[in-house]
Length: 129
Image (cartoon, rainbow, N blue to C red; front, side, top):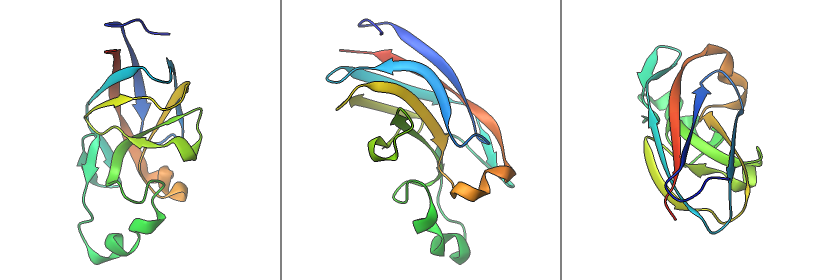
């Protein structure tokens, strides 16, 4: 468990459906998430904020994304790989955790399309309160 002001880091690989960071998040505590680096979805390179659908085909497939309201390849977090606890991180996000668990992350994509992903982003999590 992180104390106020302490941080932990993890590498999030684009090709993994779940990246277990080993970082314990505690209900009621506030955390600052910052992600740096670039990863690739087929031929599209982006940062952890992801990218908007560039054509009608991807626009039509948006509902298939693991987090349908978030952009393609946005960095998404969850507690204990539970899809009901998903939240968007992107390149920077500050959140008070509503529940406790181990932070797991992924690049937002269609679940069966991770084979064409590459690269990674580096995530830093700091407890601020």
